[in-house]
Length: 205
Image 1: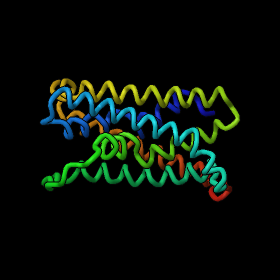
Image 2: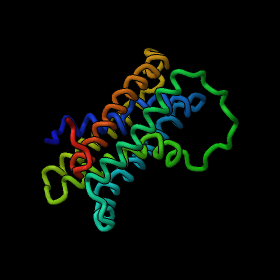
Image 3: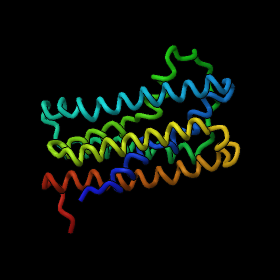
Image 4: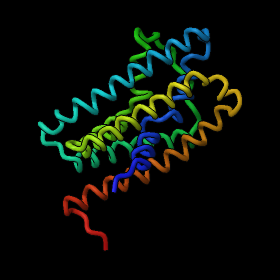
C-alpha cells in the first residue's frame, strides 16, 4: 500500500533539502544576499517546472516506451544504491581539493535545479509514483501536492541556508547525509527486490 507518508519519505530522500541546503550554501558562500535569494527562487521555480513536466508529461512517454512501474522501481533502485554507495564512500575518505572551474552560464538551471535539487534517482521516484497514479486523479493530486511541498521545503532551506549552516554547521549535514545515504541504500535494495519479486524472478525463502 502506497501511503502519502511513504511518498513524502521517498521524495525527501531523493529530492529533499538535506542535500540541497549545504550544496546551495557552498554555491552562494560569497554571493550578496539579494543574489542568493534570487538564485534560490529561480532554482526552485526551475526544479518545480521540471518535476511537474516529468510527472505530467514524461509518464506518458515512459508508458509509450512500455516502461512499467517495476522497470522504474528497478532503475530507481540501481541509481539510488549507486548514489548511496558514493555518498558513504565520500564520508570515509578525505575531501579532494576543489578544482577551479568556469562559473556556469545559468546556475539556476544547472547545477542548482539539475542535478542538485532534481536528482536522477528523484526523477525515477517522480515517474514511479506518477505512473502508479495514472487514472487515479486523487492519488495524482496527492503525488503532485507532496512534490510541491518538498520543493517549498527546498526553497525555505535555501533562503535560510546561511542561518542554518551557522547554527548547525556543515558537519551536521555531513552526518545527516551519511545517515540518509544508509537509508537510501536500504530503500534501493527494497526497490530492486520488490521489482524482481513482482517479475517472479526472486522468491524469498
